[in-house]
Amino acid sequence: MSLPTPAVHLKSVAEVVERRSVGEPEFMQAVTEVLESLEPVLAEHPEFIEAGILDRLVEPERQIVFRVPWTDDSNRVQVNRGMRVQFNSALGPFKGGLRFHPSVNLSVIKFLGFEQIFKNALTSQRIGAGKGGSDFDPRGRSDAEVMRFCQSFMTELVHHIGDDVDIPAGDIGVGAREIGYLFGQYRRITKRYEAGVLTGKGVGWGGAEVRTEATGYGAVFFAEEMLVRGGEGIEGRRAVVSGSGNVATYAIEKIQQLGGKALTASDSSGYVIDEAGIDLDLLKQVKGVERGRISEYAARRPGARFVSEGSVWDVPAELAFPCATQNELGEHHARRLIENGVRAVAEGANMPTTPGAVELFQDAGVLFAPGKAANAGGVATSALEMSQNAARSRWDRDKSESRLHEIMRDVHESAYAASERYGRPGDYVLGANSAAFVTVAQAMLEQGVI
Ligand code: NDP
Ligand code: 2IT
View 1 (cartoon, protein in one colour):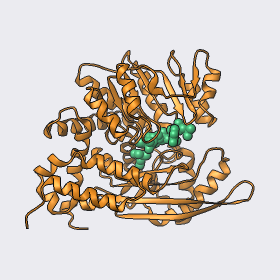
View 2 (tube, helix red, strand yellow):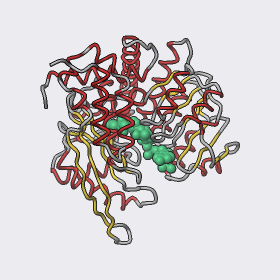
View 3 (cartoon, protein in one colour):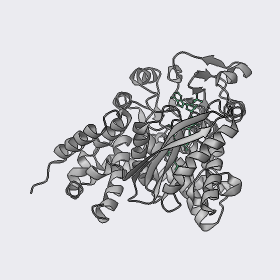
View 4 (cartoon, protein in one colour):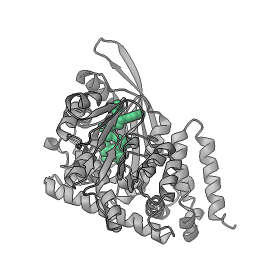
């Protein structure tokens, strides 16, 4: 029997995913973007077509959806939906974050889980891929409510995770506080101090140094690598950053440490522009400690302005770091950034740039780093946390950050090398997708049809 050509094969995989993904636009978007990169890879590796690698890769190994009942501070019963999508474990146990946000549904978690396969492969850390979360909205909830929610969520999730099985971590709405409550409940139910079952733990009880900072720092390291190839750098450059959570905060910190000027931060209510450069202590206080709105930053900072209309992408800058959420940077934003002379865009968030906007950047010669490469520093440092937990050891800050830096250099190098190999040097979308795919596909091939 003759094999279909790569183009025919890719089309048939896309058709199956489309048929199975009714009502899952984010998942379809993430799959389509990857499939569009793979024709030259399949031309080189017909054995991947023969083994049905892609047919299997687009279907999660397992999906768990469950009820999360809890009582609020007024003693009213609340019910949320919890889920965990265990997407692929060819390279190691399932690994990926948990997102608590009202917009969470299966399409969002599947897109994130699918992206995670490629991201985790790029880190070379021997981790498979999963993602989970809930439509629970932590905003405005007391610590006690968040704790009860996390305990209820873990009471079901405990059956599906383990340090060799599936290792969740944070994402939107899930940080050190939530990981602490989740770990406490896991420990209580299992009667085991299985430190490596969750990452992003407090540094005093098993968390890795620099895990909190790793995603944002890593995205800036990746941007620096792209710029340095062309004899440029971060120093002296104006940068726009969206978001004001974990990733955005530490992207801003690293931009400043490298001599750049981060001018903006945002949340779902609007953005602030601060021509003097964002005051990080104030940002951390307002968003991290007080869990307030970004407008409060401008209210307390002379010279800064809060803008509720438009977006950070209206602000002229040479570097752009989307660090909030998916599809937050569309074509009209891309045009504006290009008109204003943007040189590099690195995705701290997952899939923040729409496909049309990516194309505009690439056509305009703007360096563009997709999230699965640029934000891989977070999960890579999670894997370092797992190794430290397994060895009952603890690395200091310097070692942790230099290892992160090294990993981001390697991720950049392998994405660049694959972009050259498959004919479009500097196309990091092609490079990241193809390098990661070859790694996962080879492992799946060698492990048989499962
Ligand atoms: P946080 O919850 O710490 O911060 C999220 C930020 O994005 C907040 O400023 C939030 O604003 C804003 N935001 C969230 N949803 C929306 C929305 N629908 N519209 C507008 N703004 C929104 O999350 P993280 O910083 O951890 O995550 C940010 C992005 O980075 C996500 O795409 C995540 O998947 C990705 N990522 C995170 C990693 C990590 O280690 N944490 C690793 C790799 C990627 P508001 O306060 O108003 O809700
Ligand atoms: O999207 C991501 O890579 C994360 N939210 C981090 C996952 C992890 O396991 O550290």
